[in-house]
Image (tube, rainbow, N blue to C red; front, side, top):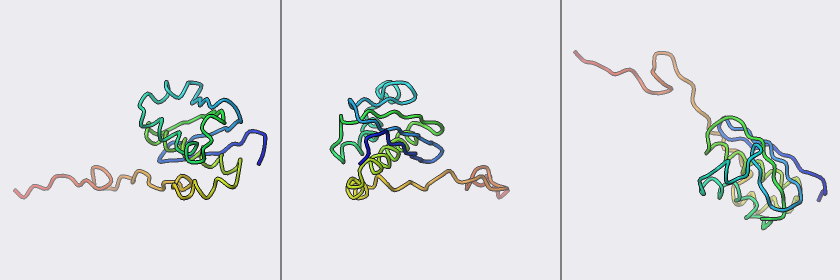
Length: 130
C-alpha cells in the first residue's frame, strides 16, 4: 500500500485515459469537468464507478482523469480500465476481485482497416448481373 498518488493508463478502441488516484473525498473529475457534466448518461457513469464499487472503495478516492480519443463508450471503458489498474497499484489485494469482474483485461477489439477494392473493411461494391 502506498500513500502517494497512484497513476495508471486505461485503453479501449482509440480512447486513452490517464488516471490519477488520490486518497480523498470520492470526487471524479474528467478533463477538468465533473463526472455528471462529462458523462450525462447514467449508463456511462455506472461503468466508470464499477471498479470502485467492486473493491468497496466508493467515496475513498478522488479520481482525476485525462481522456482523449474515441467516443463516449470507448472513453468510459478506458476510464474504467485505468481506475482498475490504479487500484491494483494502490493495493495488490484488489487484484483478485477486479480480475474476477473482468475489469483488468484490456478489450483488444479495434476498428478493422479498409481493404482495397472494398467500400469499407468488408462491404463490397454492389454486384449487378446485367
